Image: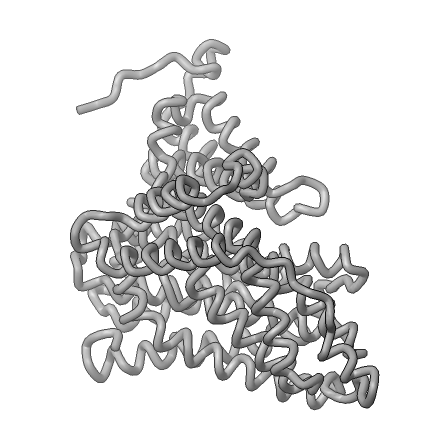
Length: 451
């Protein structure tokens, strides 16, 4: 049934645009929003996304009701819930305690610093989200390496790479996966089975390559030794912890992960799980919800809302249906070819535009494609996950975690330039993308399945 036409600003001005004009406007606003996101030095990305969303509604591409309906609340609930659980863990002193133990394990050796903090970041990023992980890991790494007399820049870049590769492994680890899970209806277990093995291998290979690069460039030489090093490692400053709060938060976090795994088959989506368990944590923890809400990354949540509305305009005018038709024609039912096209193109594009808006757009295309190919096209979802998440390591603007670490590094007096990031990250990103997508393709061709 055709939806009733609501008068718009353009109608009032006597312009009465046709279908072709509306399509052109939707594409133009999408491109302009992308450009503004890339120019974050001048316009904050959240403001850019909200400007695009406002323009979509003001020009009548979507009514406010349609715009509200285009927002994926499963994604927002998941991010909001996990942010709150992580904030409580942080208040309990959990992350400070882990960082202190990790520092002792390094024994002040640069190689150990690289591997231990990279692996720690990768593991945390798999079960939290990578943006939240780098928010607390990056300052810790800066403190540790500067106290050991090492140059922070390569270690910070290593943390970025590990956060993106580690976050690729699970539904909640990286925003593109959260989007894919919600749009495709995939659960935590689906990502563990189809993506995690390749992400884990990419993580180990990525750290090994970073180790090699840093050795060649002399970044693993130097550092303090002797009595000063022993004093650093035996820092007597007590860590402020709240054991009761830590136990409560860890129990709720464990239950949340369990429900992520078993909830999808019984109709509990990840967003509802995270929202429910984080609310329960508020109930049992002796903390002010108002204070915790002040630490929520509202800018990130509003950024998602704005993008969903801008992308919703494209969907409303039929762009994704046309792109899906073209993609269907190109691959001709050859899912293997589709894996290569989606995987590598996603990686390249994600390297030069933020992988979040790209994934929102591409997920809409694949959802249209699913109507034609059915469940047999599931490997394309996993190719999108591998490409978008790992491709985010190509450049400094490829993923949200990259920008967050860059901001922290600049604030700490160790800025990361675009060129410096590329010199370390791009070769590693190309290698890990080729490895993960290529291996996934090879396994698919041999077995007819992703694993």
